[in-house]
Length: 356
Image 1 (cartoon, rainbow, N blue to C red):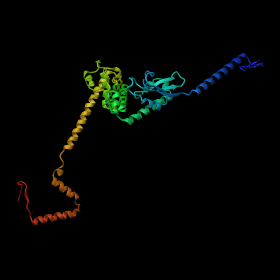
Image 2 (cartoon, rainbow, N blue to C red):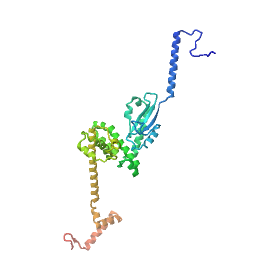
Image 3 (cartoon, one colour):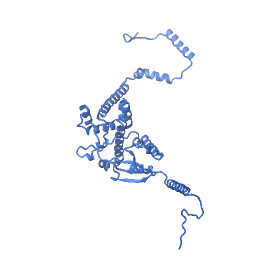
Image 4 (cartoon, rainbow, N blue to C red):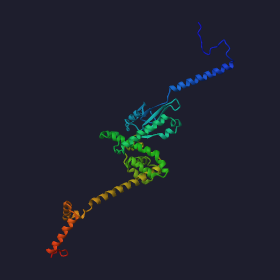
């Protein structure tokens, strides 16, 4: 039984030379290859999804969720209890575009979008999907910052204490805000320091996070580096006075100061902490001055009219009496003067205090 084969059929008729045949064959194969490549690229459009990891460095440790939208990732991220493990949770993206950069990469850690690190990679910098993910994540964080204002510092030491006190949500929010405060300082303060804009930066930093939280962040760093001679002795002494919720000198893994320490050079941290102390003293002096001014204002004597009951009553009576025309008042005054001339009354000798 013969099976017909229709692959490059050979004709009995003369169709050309071997050179012509090879040229047409190469063109045919190139056309087929280009068509197959186009079909493959059309089948696989670039896509991006998101994941949430309790530990950004080792995603296999702790809780992990993938194949999410950004909104789903944010919602799950908010449910992570910060006391469960000493790690930095993150939201990341997974780009799938057929390139060598297919896979996972962190997008947000400790309340900060990692845009600088992401854009260091040219492929991510040129990817519309990745750039849109950065914008969307930053928009979510900015909206939350406007809504929350300055989050109060929780002085509870652990999740268990917060649970007993019924303040788990506020304690969790305070802990994450401390981490955001430290992360922002680590990223931005170096540039401000070298540009000689340290006071301006610290003013905005304190305005955003509050003086107490900023001191906790820098004091955590200084307390953990008590051996470092680059910190002034007076700086170490003042930093040791700062109460840091969750500080544990016996167990490093439970020590919350590890979460709040910054990666900035000790000389810069030393200068920043000393400047915070100056700002705090100025705030206290201003508050005292305002309080004294208010006390002085409230203690001032009443006006002379209010202090003299008779004069006050006369003024009130004048205010209640209807005011006549100017001509009628002048006529009344003239009548009083004429009557006084006709029947002089007793006058008072003011010097002696007797009537004559």
